[in-house]
Length: 527
Image 1 (tube, rainbow, N blue to C red):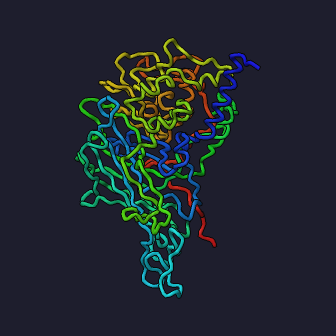
Image 2 (cartoon, rainbow, N blue to C red):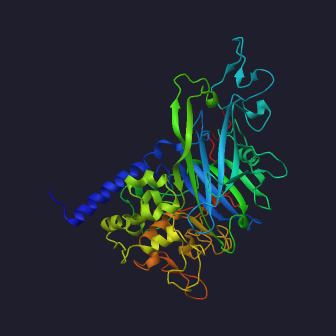
Image 3 (cartoon, rainbow, N blue to C red):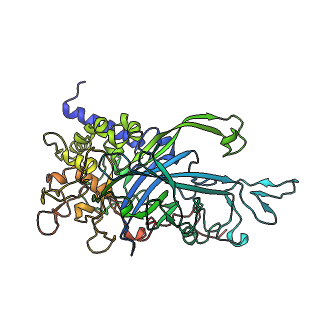
């Protein structure tokens, strides 16, 4: 049977949504076939915003999240970072879609490091065997018995951070060090195993917020790497069930289906002046993860990390190869076609126009929505240049194109378009929940929010859906911000395409590292 054009589009939409549903989970969680099988290097969300902690307005906070959908009870190994991977945050500050600064994170996981006089020594217990017998747990012994803030740790994660100026592989590299000292090795707190092991996880984790000397910066920054409560908000099931809800209904009509998950955050706060170049106040940022090209499995491993001598589970060698990439949220999920998702994760912004322009200028999502709900898919002559501006070049004006010289998120001297998260560091901070704040960011006339960078509380799903349906084009009667007058005014308030799940500001911190204390595997000390 030959399908009509409408029938063909409907069949295509059903097939596309089905395939996306297999691989795309949340902002960038398991969004591509390859990365779905490599959670330790799966970048889930990237945040970049002017710090809104009191007294920190001259700083920019960068947060790269990895390891999606962590259940707090995920023992016994929990969610260590990959010591054979390279995690990076890249900054472009001259508009050429090439990194000018890169913050490189590398991890080392040490096992069997426990040390306590008496029965427990070096990760083992004297059980009468004549020598210590290794325990199978990452931590053991209640904190009150061991006499510290945690039970005895049998796995200790440390990491280093280097700043590379220029090309990420050939540029000049210098180590981030602890402020006032020379140590360049930092410790990641163990994940929130439970209240018996770690009675006060918040106090414990806060010990690992470091004040750091960042090469090239006269003022110290701050650094934290550790497990956090998942900050992304989405009504996941119904969205990927053919948008099985009223997308113009109440924005708080549904539950955030991942509100019980944790994630691992790489958080760095640096002076804004250390990121910008010259008079341009706009910077672009994205995060990547890379693995070695080659891997040889050892059929007789002797230890988890003894790769140097070839005795570990595997030997990883060769050049670094990028396997994950994330700038603006939702791009690889609902814009890039299924056959190019792995290609996008391996690509760099400078090549985006050649590789992926069609997906942005002629997106499939509005067509799917048209079939499902009868809402006309916006398609101006020449394609969706509004989406190109929002996600690739940065926005230069408001929706009414006035004032003409308003530079929002576009670099002053853009030479090469490329998809990334862009932040205008000259725009002041707005504290979530305070006057002037909107979780719709720009669409709610809060210019400190997405797509001007991304705060942890920004409802990027609703923003992206509303923009995709034509908010910046002034069609379909959708909410946007009118900048044509002396002050911003919300146009068509309340008409927002949404998933029904709304961020709650009290679920987040208003201090670094902004994402809240992770859920504990066990919330009580009762046995």
